[in-house]
Amino acid sequence: MILLTGFEPFGGDSTNPSWTAVLVAQDILRAEGHEVEALELPCVFGESASVLQEAMERLRPELVICTGLAGGRDRLSLERVAINCDDARIPDNAGNQPIDEEVVGGGPAAYFSTLPVKSALRALQIAGIRAEVSQTAGTYVCNHVFYALMHWLSSTPVAAQARGGFIHVPYDEARLPQGSAAPAMSVRDMGEGIAVVVRTALETSVDAKLSAGAIH
Image (cartoon, rainbow, N blue to C red):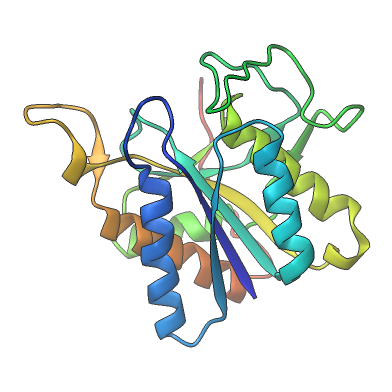
């Protein structure tokens, strides 16, 4: 079982490309014979993690990939690190705006993704889909969900063999205002890219050793 998640719209937007892209990826992977469930998460601190945990307990997936929007980025970002910090620049969809709070009280400072992010990056490049390994998932609800996911996978015996991680997606190029120069990508390419990451994770037990770091 593969669990894919995206977010509901936030910040005044009417759609969220992470959810649309996940639906595209779900269709692609199901057509290939994979058992896949897609879940739309609320853009709300706390509630998003609870909804995700309930789904994981119910479905017992072997692979969980959560996605979210990173407006301003021009490619898929394979997130490497989730940090135990909620620090919201804007309120979430319920009006919550935590500042310098832990995602999980007393939890580790950070978790690394257990996806083969380097191998996935190489596979995306071969497929002609713009991608990068990112060193920060921010401190908003995306990071909140990423951290909660990795904490649950690392601390729950029934999930010991499961793998998980997070992908940020750009704006949907079809929904940019006319004349906008904001970086964007087609939802089809996003969905194809998510499917590439899923296939790579299912096929790869040891990640590739290649440079994908950052100077700053």
